[in-house]
Length: 141
Image 1 (cartoon, rainbow, N blue to C red):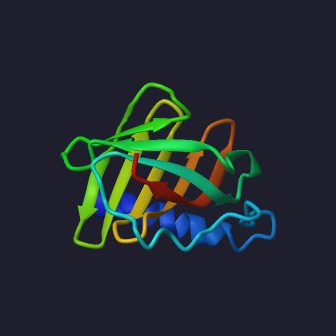
Image 2 (image 1 turned 120 degrees about the vertical axis):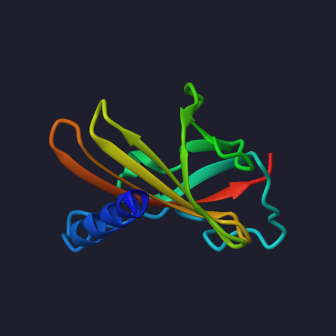
């Protein structure tokens, strides 16, 4: 139940925040958001953020590793690995989350296992409350 709340609360918070005109998704011109028809889910995926409410996040690279285990990892811009919690998984999607007590933040990722498209919500309270949403595409390494 606790994990479900961690999944639902960020989404509700983000939904409330995105109704404000200051938070709009900013597209990366010329990028495909529909996914790859030839995509095949693998344990390691290289991904790119295509659209985001934070323009500085666009075109950033992230890597999901060990997705076939109970302890997957996230590499963000080639930094050290961050441990992910696998909240939910079924044939078509997987939901992953990081909760950081250091900066009171929550990152939640949903990966579509058929197309490689992922969505991300991020919220926290580091130098004040913030929220961000992003969407991207994953490729097989």
